[in-house]
Image (tube, rainbow, N blue to C red; front, side, top):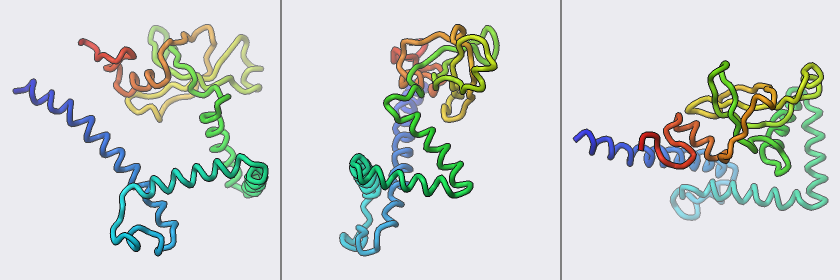
Length: 201
């Protein structure tokens, strides 16, 4: 009886959580439909709300933005927009920080989250998985002797929270697992190792 109950939970829990997350994302993106004039919304020309239309609209807007900004005129408009935002107090600091982070994360030449590492945490004798985020700034490097790197130590099971630390490269072990495998390992609290098999099975 207990075995069957646990087996059923193992099937339904991931499915329900996945559907809940997808519904949350779709509902959030559907709010972009409110940007359209009422006559263009599906409720008016179809008579009902079509879930997911906001997702399609968001993808189209992102695609068209990327398409337009790759040419010379679009690039100049983007630079002009950046200059305006950089001149606005408070907005400047927020926008600059967010843009720098997004450029680092999504740029093909960036180092952020390119490697999974093994670092000593939170003290000697204990190890955890971390991600390479780059090299420390010049001011930090000038105050340290040796080769140091910047790493992000995520928390479990929510990897969006964590710690930024600077560690000596010699104290870091590079792992063969991919970033995706490492994230799955962290989220599962070590239950699902990189080989895809659960511990103890």
